[in-house]
Image 1 (cartoon, rainbow, N blue to C red):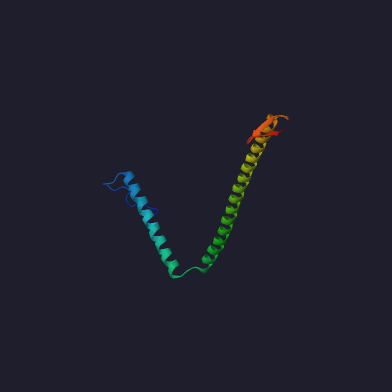
Image 2: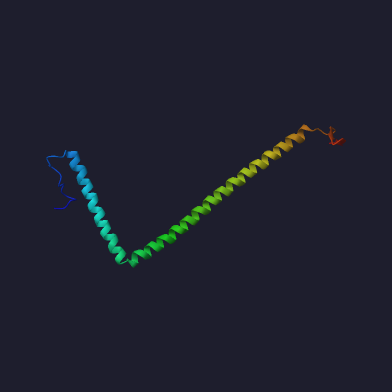
Amino acid sequence: MSINTTNPYAGHPQLSPLEAEVLWEYAKLADKVKRITALVRQTLDKPNSRLLEELRELEKEMKLVLTMYRAAVYNVTQAEEMREAEREAAAAKAALQEQSRERSPGTNWEDEGSTIMY
């Protein structure tokens, strides 16, 4: 009788059906943990060289993906900074043009006590 196929708690007189189901799920989980523990011990005793090679390849690919991701983020950040700098430069240029339009030729401007003619 396997714990995964038959509920040993079903029909127990002191348990409700819900309690029996919960206990069965817990027993199945405990069985899985036992099997995983056995596999881990087996793997630790005798490492699987093929698995290690595959994991190394996966690690290399993940490093490449991370590097490409970082480069993409850096590129996006730099592009946003460039757009912001261009917006600021355009706004400054527009402000200077507006100021120069306000000054008409022949207007006198006082600068440190001297008269400047535009």
